[in-house]
Image (cartoon, rainbow, N blue to C red; front, side, top):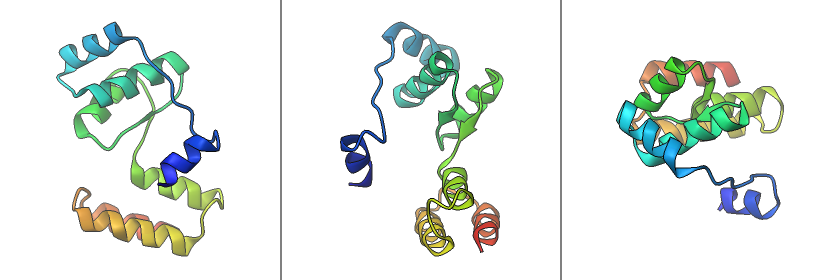
Length: 114
């Protein structure tokens, strides 16, 4: 819902990427289409790749790209005062419930936003 609203308010822009580079990254590094699109877009726009996928993070590192995870994005929003510490803590705790991140990373993120 928040993403849809951000798209409607032109805060998030949808950009199409060429299919051939996406296929090449998928084949070369054995990653899924969405992660490959994020990497191709990061290369095209000379920007960071947004992903939580371990393989995609390794590919971004190999290609010399910066990347942003959900946790690092929440921390960035908090540091820039776009969200409050309380909001950040709520988001981080919700993410912790999915079990994708190690407890140490969650604890570190919670400590950072306090």
